[in-house]
Length: 138
Image (tube, rainbow, N blue to C red):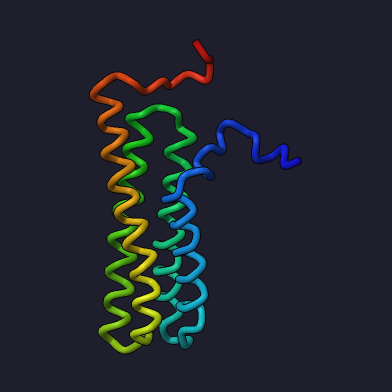
């Protein structure tokens, strides 16, 4: 039995978008960590941008405040844009293959659209007053 997985503050792990963001980070690490020495800094920045997406989803979720959660989801969306810019420029500079680019884009597209759907859903809850910030059940 996985006791650690039962912590209510870890509900973000059930989110498809968080899991997809983790997959994007893993793929980015796999592809960009092989860059030559002179490109290590841009590779590390790109890997960090990918990693920032899942970290911001998790941090926002754990804040419990809907306003803060939405704020962190927007940070994640910003990191998504940063990562896309990195992968696009690497592809156009022939630093990654077309196959690598398409593998990245496939997951990135899922993450970006998942974030947009989650933000839209939470904004709807915000407008309808459906969000509970408390850990207490009513």
